[in-house]
Amino acid sequence: RKEARSQSSDGGNDDMGGDESVVSNRRASNLVLILSYLYNYNIVHCSLMYDIIRELIENFSEMDVEVLLLMLGHCGYQLRSDDPTALRDIVLLVQDRARRLLDDEKDGESRRVANSSRVQYMVSAMTDLKNNKRRKKEEAIGLKTAGYRRSIGRIKSISSKSIGRSSEACMRIKLQDIKDIESKGRWWKVGAKWRGNQFHDGNVEAGDGAGASTSSVMRKKSAAEREEDALLVIASKYRMNTDLRRSIFCIIMGSTDCEDAFEKLVRGGMLKGKAERDVIRVLAECCSQEKSYNPFYAHLATRICEYQPSCHFTFRLTYWDAFKQFDGMKPRKAANLAKLLAHLLTNERGLNLNVLRVIDIDSSGMPEQAVIFLMVLFTTLFESFDDPLQVKGIFERAVSSRKKRKRSASVGDDDELDDDDGGEGMKESISLFLLQYLKRSPKNTKKSTFRANFKAALKACETDGF
Image 1 (cartoon, rainbow, N blue to C red):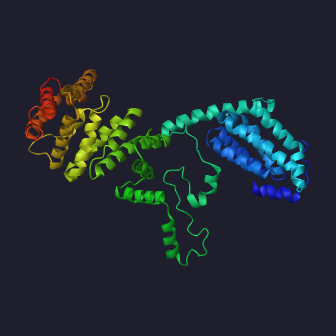
Image 2 (cartoon, rainbow, N blue to C red):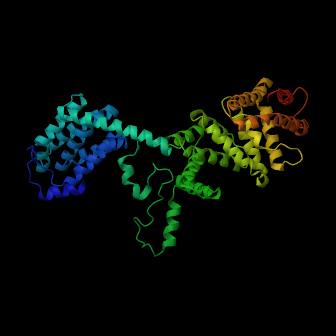
Image 3 (cartoon, one colour):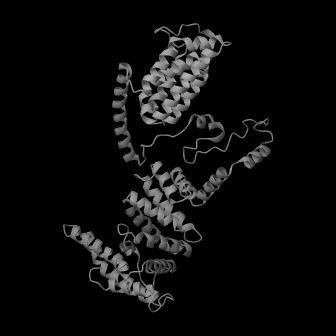
């Protein structure tokens, strides 16, 4: 736009009042048209458009007036629909700017621009826009744009389902954010913060004294940038080997609370399609690596499962993969995963005890980490409820789940029938484990909640059909 304005001022003696007047350089007009339709198709937010309009009004040259008219003609009514208050302020700003140019006796060029028919037409057009008076040409553009917008919306909806990324939210960036890309990077893109151009305004060449320059930049880095760098280092340590997993890791570990993390995951489209699987696995890995159990992960997992129920199945697969690694698992990791599972089991619509069916619960051959996992799991469950009926309900959900599989298997799925036949063995194994390990627990004292829930679990194991 600035280049076009300079070229217009160098060779521009054209009269602005004629309908056949042509902008000396069409580049600015074409760029504004592209930006206007990016806004019309919900790619960028109206805040960026209003920032550009304010800057055009501040300069208010012939080129700025032409660009303003073009922008208002193609996306003016959409701007009014999105933020009518900002549009009203813009109209007042244009009127005030034109009045100040008329009062400027020293600058003849400014007075000529303010008196031009194009400026008068623009002020009239903006007033009509504020009052919602549609002109025929603008109404035709609006109808055509609305049709394209619906078509693009359908395409975005279909593509978001196939690639697992949400396309509903637009980019809420501002003009100043774009101007600061060289120094601050793109904050709106996860993992794309830029710590600054190290040699942007220094006098040192890229090969001379690079070490001193780099150390100077490191000292100037903000706390947020240092935190993000540290998170990326930890992500590499935890084998987050894809950009998606690193982004998910930075969101989960860098959020202020579970609601903040959940909103960022939703806005990033990470709870749909294949991306949802990585979210669950990264969440479980982060939880397992904590030095002491942090309930933040359990609340975030519950929030995610409420939003996307299919995550329950992903959690089941994640735990089955973890059970295969009991031999090399650290005790702290097993305990954290057990407490996370206990929290998920308390949700009536969540996982059930059938997730344990892949564990060979054998008192003689189980790995030590498997014993720790099951002890922590059942202990946490028994301590989480005041009413023994709630513990009984957890076991009954496993019963109902197996009966449903048995009915579906009767239609012709022999594999599910074989799986259901193993329910009796699982019942006996859990009952044996509780008697051997949990009965001797120091928490199993008379008249304690632990003992009441322990007895309820044993009684549920004795129920036919578990």
